[in-house]
Picture 1 (cartoon, rainbow, N blue to C red):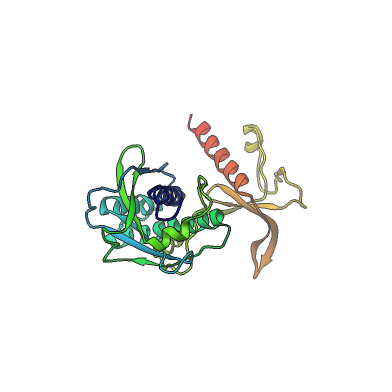
Picture 2 (cartoon, helix red, strand yellow; picture 1 turned 90 degrees about the vertical axis):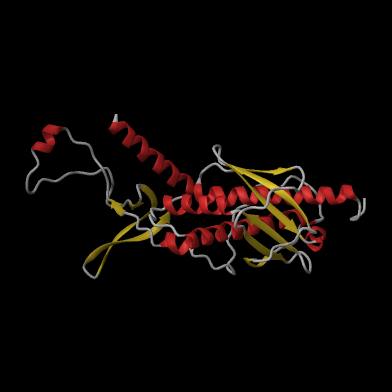
Length: 284
């Protein structure tokens, strides 16, 4: 089977679409947790999106290897409002939504590069991503992807150069969902906006349980014993989740905590679930 065979081209196209589905779904769900599902549709015919945002990405797999991601305003505006609104930003502008989609597109292309690296057994980089005002044209190969969150359906189009297809020809296997990685070459305002979100930080020295009669007996000079030894580290809590443990220090007359251990992702998740269950139990 040669690169000019229709069956070969179809197989490569299916593989590229698979990379894009997995990477786009990973990027969107990584920022929203909305349960987006992305699938590739048969055929390449699709209505032209209204006010499209076209992302163009070059790859190091071959000279002239370029991949485009074309999304309509109905998608990139909805996703932008979903992400930024969930972060507590009340006034979301169109430019904010565009910047948010830039972040998603850059992460998607980074995921495609990772999938290619794993598939081809050599390092593939996503280079020089940017918004493209012209688009790929109708003569290039491409595919249509369908996105749904269970209530709405959107469609986006991808297109690629022959050089990208040739550089993607390798050992075919079903790509695993890659970790979404934003490239340092991409300037995004989305993360800048999220970095300004304030989170409550507290330090837990320990806990204990007292009966009401014991609480009523408390007065000046009473000592409440906690369930933590002096030698044990205290917990650093962010947004009700334990993220680290450390030792108490004094800095310029103020208490501080020197971090000696970061909590694993699993520990943070369990901490958040326990706190949520405790709140639900109290609410009942």
